[in-house]
Length: 75
Image (tube, rainbow, N blue to C red):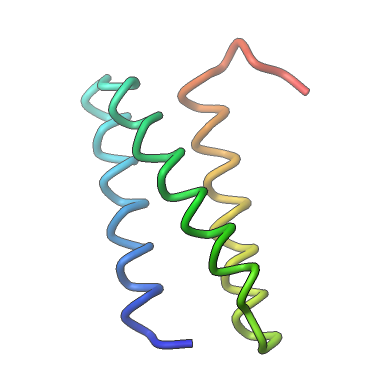
C-alpha cells in the first residue's frame, strides 16, 4: 500500500487528537466516523499482511479515541 495513504490517515488521527484536546468532541467524533469508514474500505481491499497490520493498528487507536470522546459508553 502506498505510504501516502497511511500518512493521510496519520494526519487525520492527529486532527482528531487535537480536536479532543480543544474539547471539540462533536467535530472529533464526526471526523472519527469518517476515518473509521475509510479504514474499513481499505481493509476490504487490503492484499498484503503488512497492510492488514497497519490498518488494524489504526483501528485499535480509533477505538481508544472513541472511548476518550464517549467515556459513558462501556462494552
